[in-house]
Amino acid sequence: MKAFLKKEWMEWSRTGRLLILLLVFALFGIMNPALAKFTPWLMETMSDSLSDTGLVVTKTTVDAMDSWIQFYKNIPMALTVFVLICSGGFTLEYEKGTLIPVVTKGLPRRKIVASKALFLFGFWTVFYFLCAGITYGYNAYFWDNRVAENLIFAMACTWLFGVWVIALLVFFSVAAKNSPQVLLGTGGAATGVYLLGMFPKLAPVLPAKLMEGLPLLQGGTGREDYYASMAAAGGLSILCMVLAMVCFDWKRL
Amino acid sequence: MEMLVLSHVEKHFGEKQVLKDVTFSVPEHSVFGFAGQNGAGKTTAMKMVLGLLPAGGGEIFVNGMQVRYGNTPTNRFVGYLPDVPEFYSYMTPAEYLCFCGEIAGMPAKEIKNRCEELLCLVGLEKEHHRIKGFSRGMKQRLGVAQALFSRPKLIICDEPTSALDPAGRKELLDVLVSSKEQATVLFSTHILSDVERICDEIAVLHEGKIVLQGALEEVRKERKAAATELETERAEDAGKLLSAFPFLKAQGRGRLLLEETERLPEILHFLADADMPMLRIERREATLEDLYMEVVGK
Image (cartoon, rainbow over all chains, first blue to last red; front, side, top):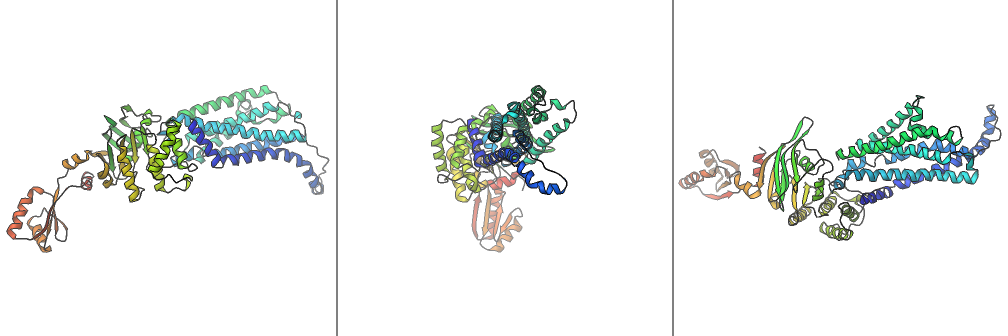
């Protein structure tokens, strides 16, 4: 498995995937406090044109919470970019036939899935906390992060949502034949869960609730409201991984 | 001992039956030619040996162990060269071979030595850049190196010479023959001259069935009898011979072919009586191509 992990590292680093994602997540991390910081200046420059329409702009004040609001707006986009860039991780290998020499040399198929999944979960964790860390650092520099309650717990919830989406990505990468099918499956499943959230009885137990971190930061809800959705996301992620391992044993390469 | 045994193997793709009761065995330390037209089912059979496709029926054994679809433990005995080998384009040939050695669980020192040895053998020792820009021939050479890397007991090559130039083809065939001492070679091809050049045994697959198999020499003896070629000095004499012996086959100006060789004395009597001058009367051995055409019914 060490050999395949080494190969995965080469693939991530030499194909540019690592660099692109690093830049994207770092950029999002910088954008969150930057947008919050520039909001008063933007409002001021627009005040003249707004006053013509009858809107009066008074003095705008921002704090770390505005930056975290931006964070929650941007992180789904960053996750989408991550899924888009990583959607061909398995399927390109099926299309080219590069896994055939690996399998015929006796490497157990489950080690292939495990290695690829390990890199996906690992880099999601690194990039996510890089983005959150940059936002946290700037927030601490410009304002005060103490306005945000349950910060670490809220961060962990969003991270877990990403883990669930990546587990879906791994499962659909094993089940599908090409990258569009992977994106359709992952996107379809995630959207389906969002739509299920429209039923008030189901919403508290769905992984989609984990992306609603602002009420946690603002102290509107307690941690206990998220335990069910955390358990659902964790359980579904494990289920996706088990199914992926079993399906890959029967996958026609 | 038999290194590979296929016993009553069947395979369907939907309604289409691709392999029908395929049974043959490959003895240890032999070079086995697996011939057949394009689409005859050679690649399908090979992929089943590698556990890459499930068998619809029958059994396959490699080195005495049964092959299972998916994770088959028999793959540790096998080195495989696909028809169009594809590699990780961001690696150099040396990195790829080291990766193969590590997957096969070889010690680091042996990996290094084997890597240098095989890159020299396939002529890629000076290629230090990434595989991305390699031609198909270069990829085929690298494919041979990776197939041989872990010193497998069975080397399976799917049309290994089809992308190579004549010199490359000869070199590859020499490599396969030299591998015979340590390993058994099964290679599929539709280039019959390659089979004649290096194979000890042959099996011909046609429309999913084995239509001819055995040791190359025995197959030649058992099958079609040798023919006799006749060439008259005067072209018009060939016409006279043809009208006297309609079973002869015209082969061109003044040339005739006698397939029923037992009737040669009759013809010789006729030639002597007619005082017909001959340029050549020559016994022609049946070539593998003749046998192949005979069994595939063309």
